[in-house]
Amino acid sequence: MTDPSTLLRLYRGTNIAMELEIFQETGIFMCEAARRFFCEGHEADARSLALEIHEEWIVELGGEESYARAHVDHGSELPRLHARLATLVSTTERQGVAESFAGANGTVYGADRSRASVVTEALEGSTEEEEWLYRVTTEPLAFGQVT
Image 1 (tube, helix red, strand yellow):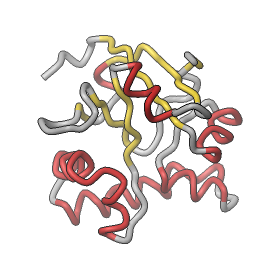
Image 2 (cartoon, one colour):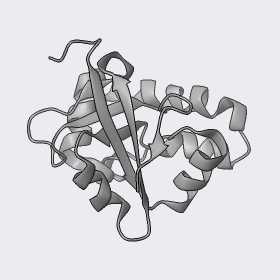
Image 3 (cartoon, helix red, strand yellow):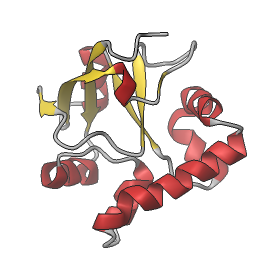
């Protein structure tokens, strides 16, 4: 386990138009659930409403670490399998991995963040090496554009 005070260089790459628009407006990367609430007009409550769904994931899967494991094992299929919106935001220490998620039309953002700011590093077997997960949203204005 990494010391909580350790600084990590984290990247988020995305080509999801809604995610990029919300980030430009707020400076925050939001999970799928928070983005949905934000776009439905619940801008001020998006985080708290998404945290309620996050708690449902934790109860159903037996803890936050179990949820993180399921996120690693099933990725974007997990919400479909459980009929529930995702509440984790993936970041990586590998800029190349973030670039692959951004694709030709996306953007990569980076930030130096403390280990304590993330929920957990992805467990063994992650398809994204050095993956770190945020609960519902990143911190405001933490990430800056890299590419």
